[in-house]
Length: 310
Length: 314
Image 1 (cartoon, rainbow over the protein chains, first blue to last red):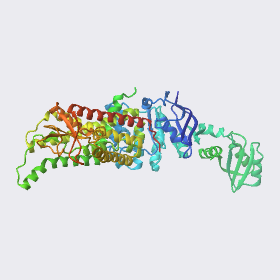
Image 2 (image 1 turned 90 degrees about the vertical axis):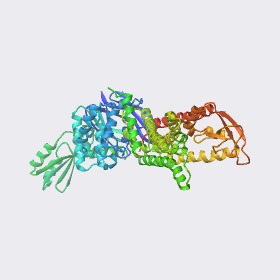
Image 3 (image 1 turned 180 degrees about the horizontal axis):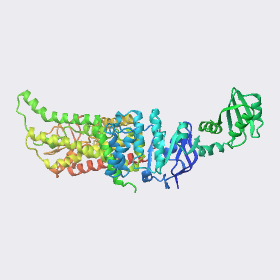
Image 4 (image 1 turned 90 degrees about the horizontal axis):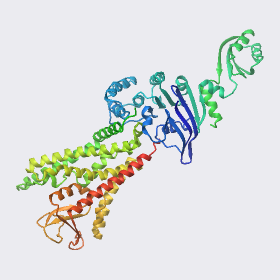
């Protein structure tokens, strides 16, 4: 069973189409990144999942249950952190977690145990008795993560979890997400930080203009692009002989030279860095480093967006 | 196991009550009401002291007036109790985490309404207790104290009319400033325009069906209209109002004097007051209660529907 199953989801705001028959599956026990430029439809999709927006069409199932029927108990095993979350300023962190915990049906005993644990996990253990109105934006972001973890959700939906956090906080959040994923939970997170998604996500969906462009692991996505990879070879003082040797390789489609770098476009998806290195060495050159270009998430992401019309 | 309805509802009531009781404007309103009750208690004695006259104890003080909370008080308490309940949640974005929890929007609405009800019951209990104890201490033994709970309930019902109106405006507009301005506009519009309309047309009965003070009549010792209908004296036993603000006083009036007839006269603005119509006290009470509950029900239904259909954008 997939944790999230979205089929042909559509949403318009007047004449603006936010989601255009978006389909998406999030496998259970994965960390699934949801990437796209501003206005791509990420937050709209997440808000529909959480029952905050009504779609114009399509279907949404969360943990096997129809999420569009208006049954709030669908959300009983789901933790959600909104983008830049805001909480009632007059309540203390502990009070609000206690109230939210009751809404999840947690017993008093469980709330007493879990609330201090969660506050400690997000580094707010010393501020639990303070009113949330006195929290900084970063602290509210951390609190947002704590309240999303109440009741040990099976599915955690995070909308830009690192937004507003300092670099240390970002690292902690990524560690937290990895730990959650190890405990048989599914994480579905939107992010504009590509390196963050690359570091923590096992699968990725990229959307633009409300449509899913691609879903899969990073490698799958790169191979789906079916563009010949380029291998950058750093050679110590490359000679014409070295260049000719590389050009002579059967898989080499094009070789461009700039300073000490040789960018070799190849017509195979296989890893041929070893063969190139051997050819360079045979021609008397010394390989300093090799790197496959066009396989970073950033490159893939930008190529996909260009293809989709941005 | 899914959480029970009661879990969500009780959590929502707590959420709302903590918010209400910690609002500065609510606490300010409570302090103001206590100050007004204090003034009503002690001012007659101060004035008597200044003029050298012996003050007259009033055995009906505790329930003869809602010293701190009249029509304006009901309106203001209704406004400050729920002004932030819905519109502020949308404006500040706190509605997003709230509505993502496993509770229905109906439960959220009922929790907010119950929170407002309990807040008002608690507030009016404090005020009534102060008024009753103060009345006993200052004026001596008080009449009809057994009717205090009924009086309290009536005050809450009157305030709930305004609560329902504010909740409706807040749920529809999702804008606190607009809600406050519209509510004040309705209150003033009904008070001023309705009053002028009734005065010049003689159709005071219209006010009976509007939220607010209603039409003024009186229970008199004999037939006919007095020259000064607002003054209680040998001719007039007590003044009675028909509007939704008068549920508490009408309840007490009816229990004290169930067979009374209420006389409604013209204002006397254009010549001597003339008899308009007469109604039994039971009908006056029934009308004020029924109209108050109708407003509460209708506006709450609109507010609930607006919240249920609201989309959380932004």
